[in-house]
Length: 101
Image (tube, rainbow, N blue to C red; front, side):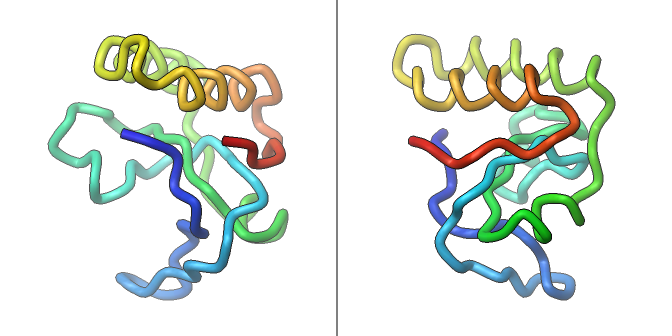
């Protein structure tokens, strides 16, 4: 599990923007990739623009923290960049944060 380097914004169902990512935001809808991993209704998504990041529905903060703990259990010490990005997004909630990997 790692940060997406491309925009996760869906222009229409099943069609993603896919431009290079500049922003991260907590998302209320888990990406398809995580659907079978128990991530619930919160994820960390990547976006090309602040506009796309702000258009994404937000999970509640409790769900974001719960899923962050689940992600930490899944990736352990192999995903420090991902865990750091999750924590930065939680600390800035509900605002997007600059993408850094």
